[in-house]
Image (cartoon, rainbow, N blue to C red):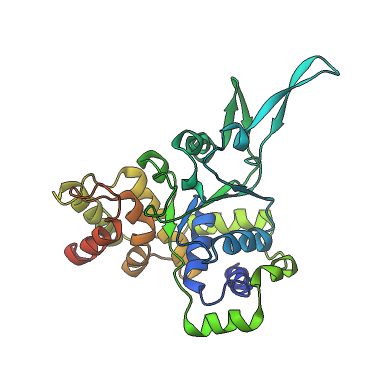
Length: 306
């Protein structure tokens, strides 16, 4: 199964050049069963990564382009009167897919953003008093532009916490950009990507990831990191139990993808930014721009060995 995961990373790398670490981070998030938030400038490959992952994982894929005038019904669906049988019929929205790309999610209002809260947490949606199960597996990959850009609405803390990880793609290296310039639009290659994984194999990988062992010393390290965030006056609020579980579970998956059956402190450190940064805020910061700095503070102040 680890060989198949390497094949997935290699396949996605054919359309997203020079971003192996970010591809592995996204794969870690999806295998762990969480949702992924990708924050970056437009044109960095966020949509390409999402579409390529859906293709190689063999998942049903839908994309929603968020705009300022969207309504929750545009995501969830709505009941429309059918004159033929004289009753309302529910028409499912794009959320009913296995991998949903919520593109530029922070370009719509908080009311519309909140339409995804129940779907992300409960894997179901409730419309007009009726609950509808979502397809399994169900993953949300949301992209957002920097909050400093015109026409954006910051995601509330309750919604940010629904995302297991937040990653950044960043500018490509000179070599990767040269390859992109010579090869043309990489998105045209996505239809040619081959499915690398079946759904039963995904379940098997998840079961094997759950069996990855975690020593008491690594658990102590996680608890020291969480305790520091809760007790230091530099933090507006600390990491919740959901956040500490997220770090543990993603570290297991990261270790598995790396070819190990046990978690080491380096796994925790590698994932601390993607898992914690969007959950942290400085007590003096009201623009939600301090998460990365607080993660660096945790890494420097908290000892690996207690």
